[in-house]
Every structure is written in C-alpha cells, then in structure tokens.
Length: 153
Image (tube, rainbow, N blue to C red):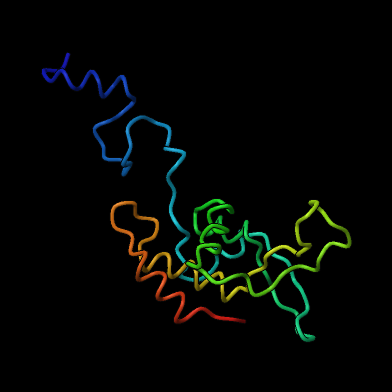
C-alpha cells in the first residue's frame, strides 16, 4: 500500500500518475464545453453541412445558421439572438421563400444563409476576441470588428 492516502482516490477515479492533458475530473468530458474550430487551413469547413446556390449566375457555397452555430460552438438560437441584438449583421442571403405561410401571422421568409467568407470571418473574429473564453471575452472589440469589417458577399 502506498504511503500517500491520495493515491487511493486517484485509483478510484481512474486517474494515473501520468498527465493526460485533461482539465476536468473523472473520465467523462463536460457536455457544456467545447472549442471553436481552429481555422488554420479551413479544412474544418468540409465537416459542416453546406448547400450550393446560384447568385447572379455564379454558383456559391452557403452555410445555414446551424452550420455557423456549430462552427462557433453555440446553438442556432444564440446566433439568432446575436443578430437580433445587432452584434452580427443579418444574414445577407436566404433560401427561396416557402410557397405558403408556415406559421400563421408570421412573415414568410427563407432560411438564413451565410457565405463561406462570412462564416470564416465570424469564426476567426470569435477566436481573435476570445468569445469562447468565459473569463475574458472581448465583446466590445468583437462587435466593433464585425461592424467595421463584415464581408457582404
């Protein structure tokens, strides 16, 4: 038996003496944590669902609000909230409108679409201004950067 009583607790928790790089106790990672995709080579875009639409005769790749939310490690409702608060501009593109009213009394609109440039810009801005860091996010800098530099295409 070891002379250190804490060794017993390490064995019970499944921990070993080696540092495995985890920043949480136990063996199951927290569900409310995650990281924003690192856009070093933009290969992470391939993992996001996308659609192609023709704009002025040019075929372009677009991403839905769900894809943007996944890239930002947020929920689509959060991205809609940021748009409603004016923190990010409204989506520049939308899918074709449905032919009939979907929700009584609500305006008929298509789904929000973001171009590849817009999605990459928002993810890079979130990384640059540490939006994913609960201790020191720079929301003021993020909002100013978005207002000054957001791509419209």
